[in-house]
Length: 352
View 1 (cartoon, rainbow, N blue to C red):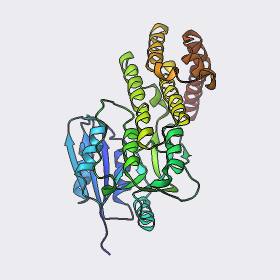
View 2 (view 1 turned 180 degrees about the horizontal axis):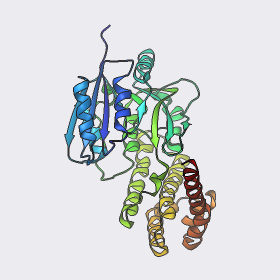
View 3 (view 1 turned 60 degrees about the vertical axis):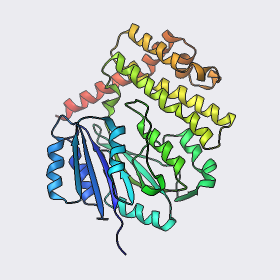
View 4 (view 1 turned 45 degrees about the vertical axis):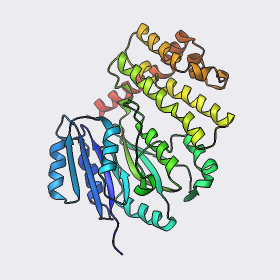
């Protein structure tokens, strides 16, 4: 039987330290009928030279080099240019187990489904440890469209387990044309893509295997450049998670219970966006300004929810007790964070 082509789409941006591990995990897959699209999204480091090196080593690699347009555009571009029957997305600082494509494809053929979704391992860069991110099911789970309302959508609404575009094999013709969302955002696009995909497909298998390795840097939470950047992240988060309202109707699950779930999730996501602000060295007045701004974003949700259902961190935020919120957050989040950094520094010095 002739092997079917699988396209792997990899957006690349300033990952010269990690991209070789990613590429190596793709070119050495046990399934070899691959099309590997490496799209350099305006990297300013040595990434493009690394991509070109591998292009000459493996005929299956296609390198696209252009200016920066962001991950949303890049994923769409890769999807449209791909020629495989199946598509897989991999971030350029992550990697796959070498059996990933073959095993996912075997499951897809066996069950004749549109998507096979597998699990992730979170790899902590600076702590030399890893943690498995459990998926939706402990055993293989096959779900048809008619059962999505009970077997799939609750996980999408209540967890992060279906957020990522990675860690899944997609039958391209099942999605027809991945349109993407035209809203201007710089974060949260994974969820937007998956909401569109889950609306279009007719079947899915959850495979309880940990094939995808997600590289995680603990210090990423403090990468905040300015007050404007924080506000931009808040807006993006609000835009992305309020998309759930539209999909509740499209999925025919627009019940009071699910509306309440979405209201609570929007509020939580906006509140969690303030954690980097709390950890930062920004002054009190600026922190107060951003906290008030964040509360203003969720005014519609606050009109439809009982804030007593939240823990103290979110409750103080929603009830506009901003000074208490910042003080509580300082004690609960920033002090432990600083202590952990000090301990880590001491351990590094000792080990030297």
